[in-house]
Image 1 (cartoon, rainbow, N blue to C red):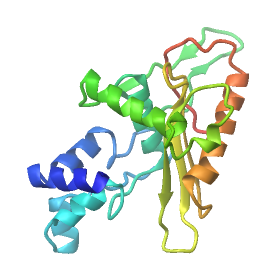
Image 2: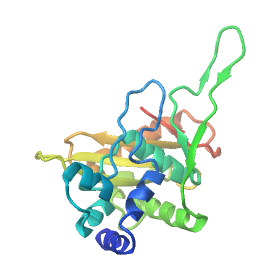
Image 3: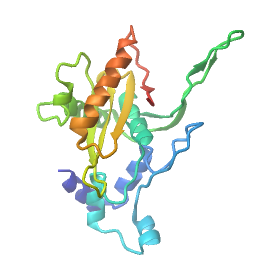
Image 4: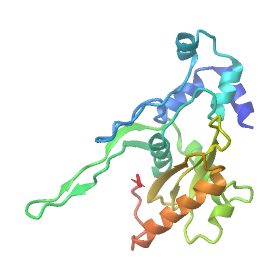
Length: 227
């Protein structure tokens, strides 16, 4: 299915996928303070001509549609992207410190900084959110087994990243609860195997630990947990 979508977008405009990926925060550093980060890479025709001396082929868009080929992203970019989907479409700059409390003096609170709004209407955003929730709780969800019996709802995406070695990297990134997100987490386990079997259970454990410390689950703010 995703192959076919990639090819259809290529036929409409080869720049659609790269432009949309960048609008979601990929291909650029988030600007988080105090952390050394890389910008990742969103390839397109101009990049491929400059770096590879080759044109952009339909197969490049097909591979890009499933997150393969030259595309590079960081766990922080992915969790920031999913946090934006969960909070209704606002892409924030991640921050490590929410507030500072001094023994004497007023509390210092770091206000969130908006980077961009996702270029999606409410209907399209709802489709994406429903698809992410189905990954966890749908009858054909790739992470369904990892969340059986969970006391919370969640939305997310499994990933199995090829490494050129015997075992791939295991990914799972998402947010919880599904309908009113409180926390977004990205888990990557290097050379651990499949994301659904290895990374998704770790995500569940982190969310359970987080909610065990939260007496109230009714707030609407999305928090990016970098643990």
